[in-house]
Length: 253
Image (cartoon, rainbow, N blue to C red; front, side):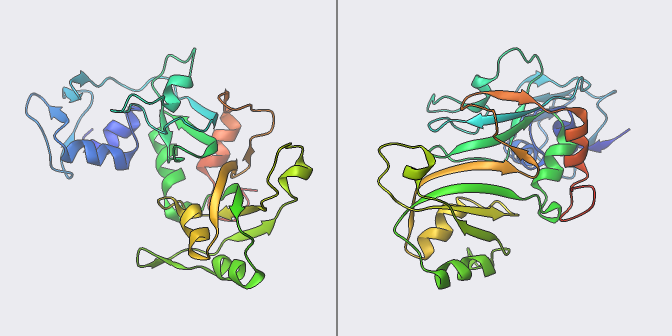
């Protein structure tokens, strides 16, 4: 059965559908010999020879989804031209090729999903799914309640208003068992979208630079018991719950 190339690539576990579209337009995909650059192009994985970066695609095998606690100084990518360590390099003992769902910037830490399940990746990245992601941030400066309320209601970034979010103050880092803390305030922020460096840019808008940022929750998944650099495989039930997550639906709960 013929399907769009980007869907075939995502289903094969090579990359997310969005990344697959970039691969196509960059001329990295070949179908039966010639390079294909048109996003509307279709193919049949059973009957056509499809190559991505010179490697022949095969029928997808076992679906694998991992929850990784990314350390600071690791890039959220499969490879890096600057030869920095990638999140994929932290995975050991998994034969299947997985890729990160979304990103955490180089200087941030915390939870990140890696998978070869294209349907799951697309659902998690879709704006309509409204999957909440919670971060703990350490700030340079103390915002007042009016400034925080402004962020919660939504501000304009890149010409588009951000979705409403939730922000609450946390106890000081020094009281959370972190010796040597400068006493800078910590806050928890929960978003249902993930724009480029969104958390850092939002707090910068009210004059508070983010000193540290850690993602501690994705939907119902938390970092409890997962040390930096470690990962675990999601259960079938957890994957099903994520695939059916949509805003505040009963399935999500």
